[in-house]
Length: 297
Image (cartoon, rainbow, N blue to C red; front, side, top):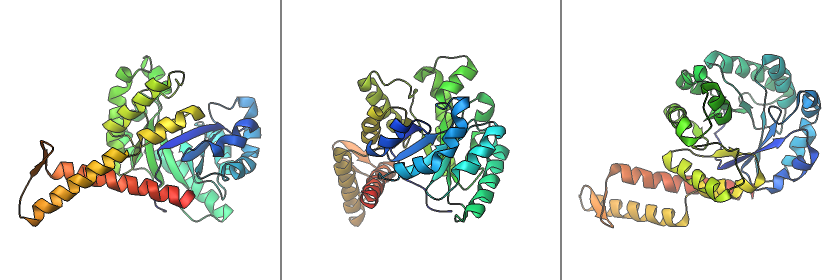
């Protein structure tokens, strides 16, 4: 299996709408997701599948990874996989995960298709969506169901519908937290926002939600409108001030250890092991994003 990606923003692109496909690579998202699911009407799905190679080639013009979101029913998922697994696609978004056996089955189908297409085994990543309470009970085993899985997320709108709630941050908090913890325990990316990505009319509110999402532990998020991309890129990357502070923390800790001291203070706050580890994580994240931008720029 190849190394996992570093993403801040992932933009959905309806696979059957040429005007969206044509400009998607200019939007600044780290990944573009050609959608075969919710944004594609039933009568357009065959057309969307047939157009994937041309659409993916257009998306490849930008500095972004390219993925495909497939449908959940096997009657649709199987032809989706047959159409979506080809050179130039980096991964699939698996919708409405039912459990680890479901993921294992799709992994097997993708492996067979990789072999047919001459793609290295395990090349395609999986992003997995948990979208109902029954699947949430299996979040930990789902997160570990395939080495292809690089990210786990809660489908906020569908999950809220399933529990009879409005998709508010309050209603989703417990489920979002469970998915985040399952992802971290499995060593994959917790993806998502504390609320829903559906609203883009109030960008100040969206930006604030993205910042909250990063603070509680999420690594990146999807979006449905290009205007949301800059907010996600800013929110899920360490700021210049955070990088400076992280370097200060590590320098103070290094100096303390050289002097044989334990925890020390910086700006009136204790610098102990968790603080140092968070600072190291900030710098590692900043370096990974910088390397990604250099490599794709």
